[in-house]
Length: 494
Image (cartoon, rainbow, N blue to C red; front, side, top):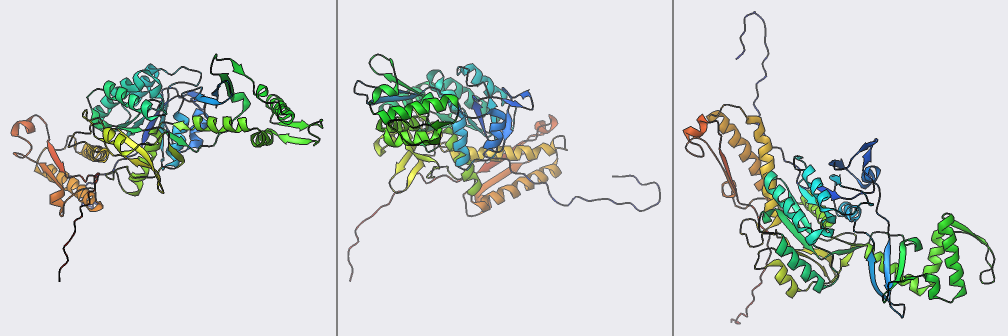
């Protein structure tokens, strides 16, 4: 209490409003991977966690996509047998799908440029760089699948970090696959290598997705090879049509000299004019059937992307529209055509419920509904407490929010007055959560409890040693994963 010694009028402001718990961010992902550059105002951003709010801001600091280079393999009949993208850099496209699916501000950790080989050590260093950064709540590493064991050691390290900091989860991607056989092999490898620790902090989604992101396919980015011996094939050798050969020659000239070319009259083409490179490609696309096939397959290969970025965006969308307690499932995916192959019920049985407990969340396409997320489990699929990703993320949210609010009471007197304030603050916060639908129960006392005090959560020795112990119990809502309808025939009555 202030001591007054000089006569006069004194003003004292009395605090009547109770302290409150401020909700922390629930969907703030960090993307760790390779970028075109990493620079801001002349300073390097390599291995520096950097917050961005849009794709434009990302491009100003980290550049654009990798080269759209594709290798097409042709058999002796010049039929396309395989299409492979010449890079495994997925961060840029994953980020684009993140924003398309409802994502907002996020964090980027660049671990290297496109000229670098993908390294588990570099990605692990990027993961370590966020360990003491409090903002991220979701970890996404799109290029981890290109490291040994489909990135399982990296994901194990990420799960360990989540368990240590208690405010984040990791979205795991499965290795590249194109058929259900490949997919099953990748799933088995992942389950065998991911270990059994901290599984409640991770979620896995598959198969990979074919997106609708726009692409520009150029001859300079296409490599044609013979399946039998790997020799290079020039497109000119696959046609005898003079007009197509002339068109290809004009495209070659436009690609080397600029983005356009002056067309002169020839025996085949009497039209004179100025044509852009895109106009020339459009003409070739309409006249040369093989080129149409190459473009279609190359676009599909470039747009085959792991689902981690998509899911981070869906988490953000669900949190904004409903709340973190709502399972991020039965949700439409934007800018995606379909998964790389169709999952049927029999296959999903072994993905969703497995003897190891390591659940894989399926992404499926349904007639008339489009592509939907059709799973809501963590990797701890047999754990009754932490089976569902929404429950895990909700507890992360509550723990981080309360922890932040309790900071104000450090070094306050460890007595009944402080206990009452803390209990009232948390009960008020949880009552609002119950009203919003995050907690079960017809009454607040059915939904949660807050215990603090001597002979409740603390002993006299705890107080002497400066410990204030607080216990919170929550009845979190859980998703209706299985809806079972029972029908029977009813006898007619007079």
